[in-house]
Length: 306
Image (tube, rainbow, N blue to C red; front, side):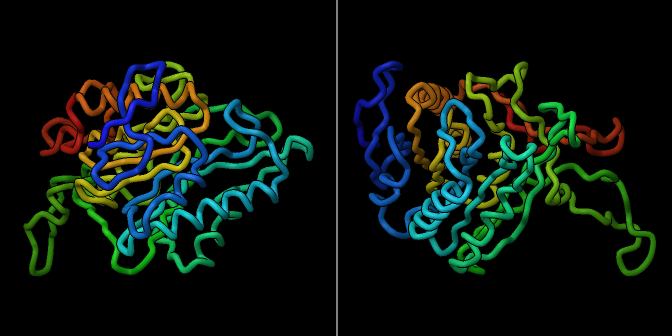
């Protein structure tokens, strides 16, 4: 890995300029600048959760149309740098118009055409459901966000086995036909479907940092292991505190990320270093349903040991 000192607060050493031999690249600045410096066909997977234009400390509110145009530019640049076998996962929630009686604008619907108009194909609209969040009093409380998974071509990487979850009825057998008496389900587990029950990162979560909208490593682990292979390059244009890069390190992928808020960049560097050294604490990807003892499958075989 090329060496360049760039983080004064943490005494960590990561390159800020991309090179294909970098294990990790942390760019202190605007993702448009970084993306324009990348060679074509360099990214296998883009995983990000961009700002929602709702007034958080790391963003500046702009008119909604301008926000969509800005996101469209970033999406276009990501697609230009994506490999033919690559995927983009854009994880978003809702924009809430505080000036218009808190009207909800679902960002995945507004951003869909940014991908589709450039020839990408939607493979899944994944629903990430979580149990905790802000309580609303003039509408139902929001408890989910969406991940738009697009691919550049029909020849894309998809590894289902690493992300299978335990069967609800692991001992079930076929009762008729040629396979009567044989197990009717995959012994490695079932497809996790397009609705993911994964706890979000709240105040008592083991992964919590000062970032107010941090997403969990277990969520990103599923995307990285299913849509890339070892040593592939994973990119996050809105890195925040580095969850995508930390998950990439855990799963032996190369990674690059951009962040304009310096305190978050320092936290990201610390988390990535811990992940590279197998020292980062994170919550396992455990299913909501746990098969009973004696059923033949009593624990998640895909839990990452700490």
